[in-house]
Image (cartoon, rainbow, N blue to C red; front, side, top):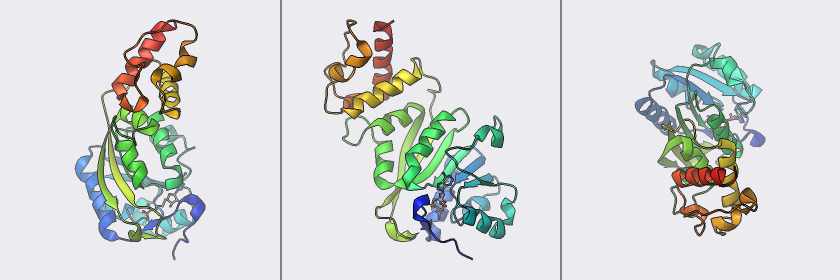
Length: 259
Ligand code: SAH
């Protein structure tokens, strides 16, 4: 039995055992969280190596019924831990209660950013994430201020996680091969669990600034300020020059000016 790759589910199955093992081992050697949720296991290319590490308590969540049937048949060790569900919609509280868990996966590339934003929502419970993305997305997420690739997803993820780009993976180790290379990154939750400013406002400001990334902050924040007077060291800067801390400070300044 084999699962037929479905494009709309972003299915590109890893066929290179060395790569699958490398990711699973990197996970085991770098992370402390022993409860692990793999998103999109497909036919279990990575899962089999996660299961080799006896210290891990592995759960998998898969949206594709055919893959779920495959896993049930070939991975008896996983019985009771194969969740037939959509990670973007699943209420993770019903799965793990308040217990922390790590997220790993060779993610479906069409929804990889949404998966990460969902992880941010549940960040209280997710101390660690390791996963494979399109290389460009992986690089963008890990990029620091000052770079052309630094953007909304970099800032929002780096607000809550420290990020390390681990390694690049070639197209030909997948079936079917994706059009682009892939990159593996590791995210470790930082100390900034709760922001000192209004989180929703912060997100709106970050998005507004990068949606007009060529403009100076002075122009993009106008709708947030209205007719109030506002002075800030950031006014003549462009968004890619601002670090996470700078965006937090800018949000605090705007909050203060508009009370
Ligand atoms: N980990 C496997 C498969 C990767 S392809 C391997 O490396 O070979 C991505 C997998 O994510 C597919 O199996 C796809 O069915 C699954 N998937 C896609 N959308 C999903 C979602 N919303 N929730 C859970 N799994 C999803």
